[in-house]
Length: 347
Ligand SMILES: [Zn+2]
Image (cartoon, rainbow, N blue to C red; front, side, top):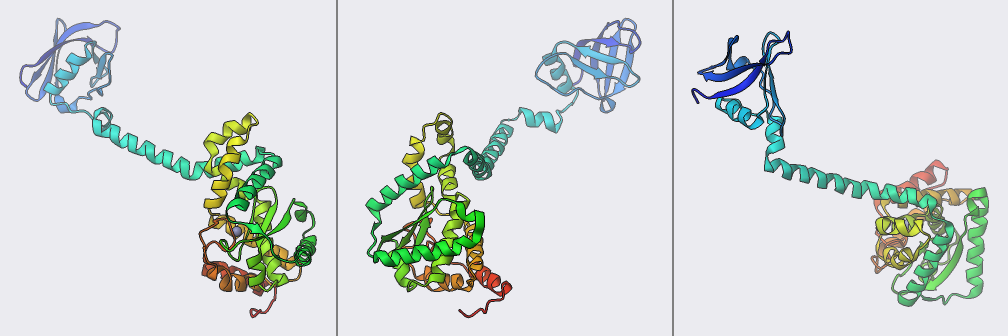
């Protein structure tokens, strides 16, 4: 646009005096005209100020002088008339599509916070949750499971006593680690099948079906319960419950009311499954208990190969040991541990 003009002030770079001038475009040049000023600059040699929301526009000129214009809108119009385009940053800031991209990035960040932040938050909250809460949640969950999927055990009382004693003897080699509250309970459950699981607070449930399927083999029993004991040690069940309800429950714990946790726990423990990390932690504990008692970890590889993979209704209780077909990696872990400890790989 030829002949565009704009009133502004000129500072010579030496004094503070503002000289009234008029800016005009002459082809590819900017002319600055005033009573004592007559300058001409190539447009492409000028360092145009970025367009911001308001305020005066100041343009530094080669040689230390500068031009100031208080009418930002008029300046911007003049700058456009001089062929000046916004930098990419300003264009980004001012475009609608940028707002959409920003929103998208924000959602990504929220998603990341959800994925990684909540497990972290649950771990931190866990430290402040007293063990009485674990026990209350375990009891509520067991009541609920007893109504839906569990029935009283049909195993002879003496057999249950022997199995409990076998596990306690094995745990006795673990020293202080064995001090964690735990009690082994038996239940008949055609629905869950040969399985075992640990509830917050220390209750380990073993199904009659598991005892029968393993022919009440003491070593297998120790390995399976060692795994469940590992879940108890790390309070994995509580971590699942907290992760599932971390936002709503935080305030409840802070004011000492855990009723919302109690309400959500049975559903969470009934449907959620432990992560691979949790399972690996529990498997390591199983190996510790087995080796401590002088038993071969091979027994767990056998268990997973024969029992876990043929367990029916695998999806009926996600936290149970045989909930998912055991992967080769997991079986290999027990074989490796057995080999390292010098046990033969054939059971
Ligand atoms: Zn497990």
